[in-house]
Image (cartoon, rainbow, N blue to C red; front, top):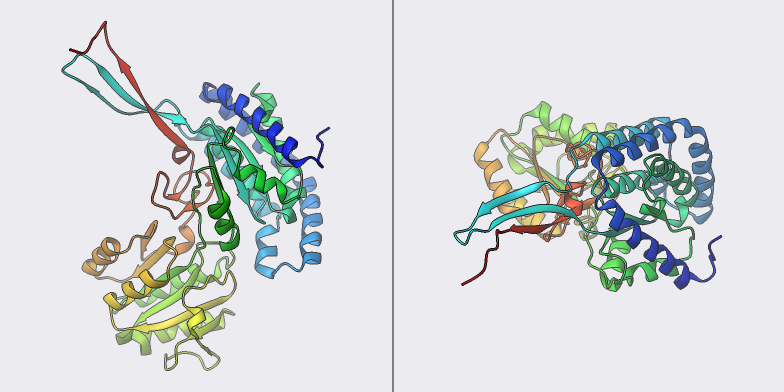
Length: 421
């Protein structure tokens, strides 16, 4: 039985066991990793009633803590969401194994044959809030990429995470892989997070997945390298040449499909030439859909719009609220996005190819979209099976972080008694 009172000893033990498991995983066959994931998927589905019951405990705890409705929505599991977890586990299992993939190869005049091949990072620490499905996604992607993982979920999702983690362990056991390859920190004590951030001897990278507060804490205090996953301050710019139906369909889906995800649209920029037509139609339909609109003064739209303040620009609502503003053109839109976005996802709605080219070239967001809902900003929708998160940094991994992004590379150099002159 683990000593949950002695947090430094607890975390050191978890780290040591993860490090040992990582050596085994690095050479595990693709077939064994796939078996572990498909078995875990079967276990999640067969135990769905128990997972939902555990989740209800977490929801009650979250409500007692006074968590917001969007946070509780992120926390909540039902059969549809559990089916999504199962599908993601199976999709990751079916992907090509990234480990050992030859990225490049060349011969040198010296007689050397050089290959650059994918290799696991080692041990990954994942710190996340609310969404218990991250337990399955992160565990699956780390396993697929040959990495051991230490999962530290939010205090409000502990019971759900434990129930899902048990399914992952069942998969590891069935594939004769070390159970320590996927470990869940078994305590709500925040001291465990501080220990994890400083485990330079055992952990190779930290992935924070949560709000601005969590990511900021990790970036400030981690001694281990970090993949930054900042908030999703997502903009949609409706250009003067936008198609009305596409604008309506894309904006409504981007805002209302799920308001609590990081790919939900938070700010709408409308070209002044279509503010009285397409722009007004879109805003009126958003209002009819139950969205609260914080609009700059004078923007045409429904009567019940709230006047926006400076605090509305660059804000992640994660709720049925959107900011809206009129812009003079694409240059004005790009300037606003550069000032207020989080480099997550931004979208242009237009039929003008030149405008698309400018938008794509002049913005540095991890994901840029044209005539497509920003709710597609998701590893599963990108064909990655799942994701650990959307990395908004510019080093190593960027955008959805799937299995391939959780690898590095090494050089394999072959000679035949070759010496350097």
